Image 1 (cartoon, one colour):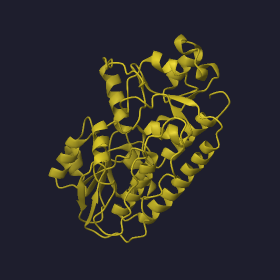
Image 2 (cartoon, one colour):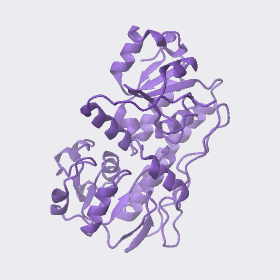
Image 3 (cartoon, helix red, strand yellow):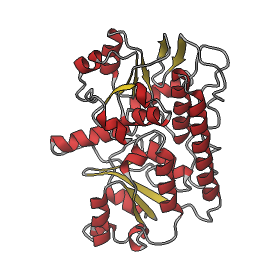
Image 4 (tube, helix red, strand yellow):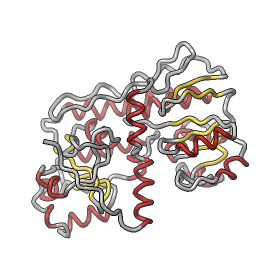
Length: 355
């Protein structure tokens, strides 16, 4: 029996809606893009010989079944010498030709900004979106708006030769392409695909060596989490609260669902009918989550204090296994995602009280 999904009602005030939409965009909520990627070409595949492409999204494992294979193991070796023009297929299934080595790059998402800086390409980034705040050096760069309020004049004035976008920004892609700027959509749906994305960005920018080193380090940390998960004697039931009003969770095909599974948990919303379902509190409570994850400290404190009495009988609340994970670490598909996964793993794999 599938998890009942509440009807989508009002989201409250516009500021709350804006914050929710921004979070879902940055945590891969573009369901149409996900469906298109699943049906389209492999992510990061290039027309040039020798490209290893990216790994497909892992199949959804049924509760109680085995773990996924090692993450990030099929994204290429990074050993090939980069040559331009270079043609690749991005995560929107679009064929993109990059005529020359990019020297003036726009980043339209915080995750892309973090990837570029982690690869030592910060000196090539000429503009970033309004949400890019890491690393600190990004704060000094010109702002080009965001997906909901793009500033095309600012973008054009920076004379970019490449833009890195995310899903859900079709209008922005098209406008930049009209200006003659190649746009690559980076929209990983799993931790493994984040590692593949880093390899792809490294290849198209000529930073293959740095990308491969970072990708291997990240893959090793993911594999360590999976080894710990495989050693668990019990896979706990996990509820991830994405939003509190209305109550929303992470369903199949979402980034958070992937992290729960990698860490050894069973997602109680794993049989929902969308990646980001609005759910009935009664249905979640009936499934008795043993671990509750959230990025909202205020909501977690309400659970702990008894302000939400309906949840008091759940195993997670009774045992104090309510964990706040850092939003930017788990919602930005970039280099720090492994740190976020490790936070999730500590919460799921711990036997003591939540923090």
